[in-house]
Length: 346
Image (cartoon, rainbow, N blue to C red):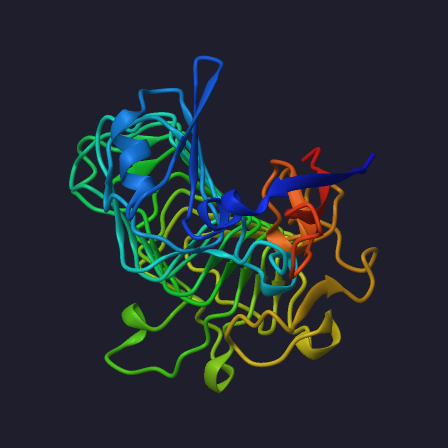
């Protein structure tokens, strides 16, 4: 059940500029909360943190440590414009590297303008990245020391997802513009895979699944139909494709295909969707949930499965919905502020 809290705070005017002129990052550690300000509060909070701590990031574009090497929980304000009106979305400009001591890292509610990369051949386990937006995600390496038990869920991925140095992990309930590359033993479920680029340089480079083996691929909506070609994959073997929606009849090769929905006009599937790029203005809910049922008896696409997509990708921590501030102080020098917060339960 959703809960709402209205908070009326009387602030002395002399403190208003101090409170609102700087971005603040909260570090929660061992039951104690510390607030960091200054020119780079995220890095300051990160440097003071230890494994298991939680960092809460503000809205706005904020400087950040470009390498994460601790098992932290890092939560931003979100990235959907209509869900961050009161706070602004949390934006990190550039790319982010995750290194070997970041087991159990959780990232949520952040827009990263660049790529999330895992340091080459570093084994980083039990990472969760959810309700974020970023360009690419890349597990770099040879697969000798693979990352395991990583869950990439409920994200918007503008580019490719490359799993060269990962296995026994999950890519689920994401909206992905690009390809899935070099995946072995990855669960790929309930995604919307928008990729449909023209062929150039051979099929190996311009298909949805490139060098994907031994994966269970279910409940996805797969747009690939360039030129009416049946090839949605290349160099990919021993996968099982179940209960996916295809706009073509895919070639099978050495893969198993069962209970898929073939030759579907995707213009009839969604409430409102156009093109092959993610858009905040599109509505990716299905016109009829009962028409396309997944292997788990939930609906195909991002609103079914184990990790149903949260509308607006709102982070799971309490979310500020309304932030109404008076523009002037009263006769006593106090500033009236009204904040409405929604308590999240998922």
